[in-house]
Length: 207
Ligand SMILES: [Zn+2]
Image 1 (cartoon, protein in one colour):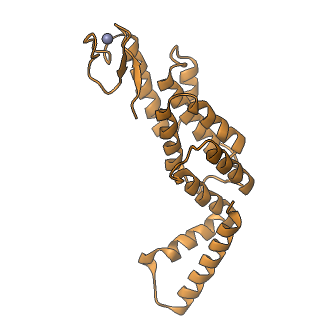
Image 2: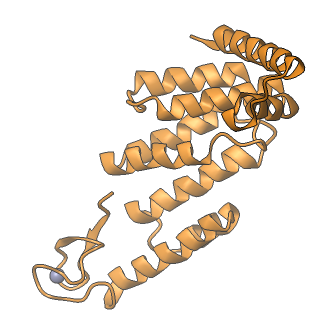
Image 3: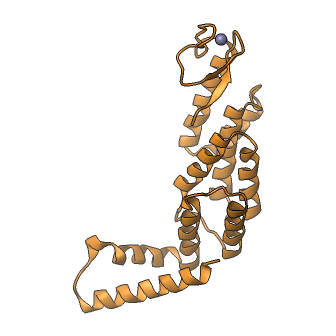
């Protein structure tokens, strides 16, 4: 993803991975407003890695750079972490609103954001109801936001975890992992039962 900001000396648009401004030679990473913005970005990224979304939000709210796309992108990440991990179940309305807001920025951010959510899912600590799953899938399709179905597939795994239970999913994953295969009647029976139940649930979820 190519993130951009304005050089603090000549105001030209520069990619943040560049060492100096191509136009005026200013070291924008060290000097002026652009340096402060990049420093804030690094602080926010660190907080996101540490799963501190509330700290990210309060840090952004008190910043003069809160309207900058670079900062708004981190705000959306924090909001998504709260939406996924801080409630009993994923609220599809909130989930889609967050994606909608970041989609109003550049295409780069949109794709990067969808990718970010995909990496967070599935999780045993998240629950997703079939109705919310259907809403989110419809939203992604209508907006053409998930070309390779990567996020949709992750959401399918997530709803199956919620529907079948963590214990079932752990067993299913164990029995269907080739490394654990045993040529034993009890094992095979159990594996067949788990696969049947899993596939039945999956079929019922298809839209
Ligand atoms: Zn410049």
